[in-house]
Length: 342
Ligand code: ADP
Ligand code: MG
Image (cartoon, rainbow, N blue to C red; front, side, top):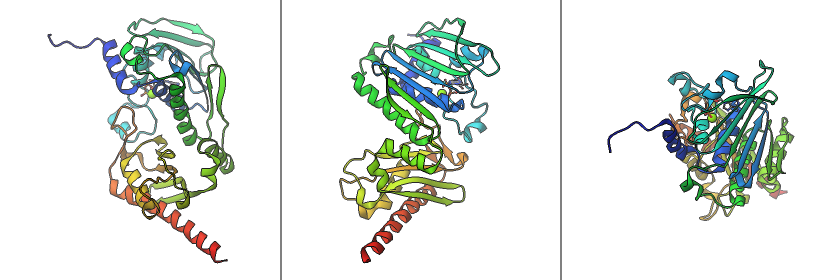
């Protein structure tokens, strides 16, 4: 075969393989877009585990009529304009690929209205067919994205979908992760018309703790130590389980870097080291941790799903996190000690 440039739709479908693994990945990308648009109220409606319908509705800034079609194009983003922007990125998105990828493997309807417009506009695209018409619609300021029949034109992908229950459980987990990181955001999740989760806006400490309890369980909150550890530009906050309440499974570990949920080897190692003497072979710490640092000191553009990051000074970060947690565990022990003397 001669070398040819792939047609844009085929290129999009291939790229979709990287970010659109299953309905939950669509939900993650779309809710992150809503957050980037400044929404504080996001509703997620799911039908049949997301296989037939995923609808995200937000009250964010909206997309102007003349940018609606562009939003669906590949490498089209409003979030960066230069490589310098990327180095200091704080938005979730910057690749300009999610909407292009999702629309290449589904029937996607994008409806939006900005505060400057008196009416909303809607664009519909369907898989390979990139023809789209823009028509007037009814919608308050904000954006709705409706993704119907995910993978309808990529049967190989569709085959990998699990049961509705399993796919919905993955979606639920995506929403839990976001709900933990963004306590002030109102989130509603429905499945087949039934409200499954409703997170109210949590502003003060008590409300925030209530949200953590709703997501991680009362047991975790009751036995957790609060962390608030700072050094220069670094800030570690959140909760870790006391050494007595470690778990037999590695199932309660949430780590966020600048608000982005990550699975990071450096941080995980630091946490295990802090717990070292308290952990047996099959025991795991439970934690909800937020590390905030200067965005210039961490590279988030390591992988398309952005689950991985690279620290410019990994050793420094490792020791900072380890000390912060070790310090919290130590003060808990001293507290225990003084209690037991009485
Ligand atoms: P990225 O998030 O990397 O910029 P996307 O493909 O996810 O790429 O989105 C493309 C663009 O569409 C965004 O940069 C943004 O301008 C616009 N957009 C997408 N979703 C929303 C939304 N919910 N509200 C407002 N604008 C949005
Ligand atoms: Mg995006």
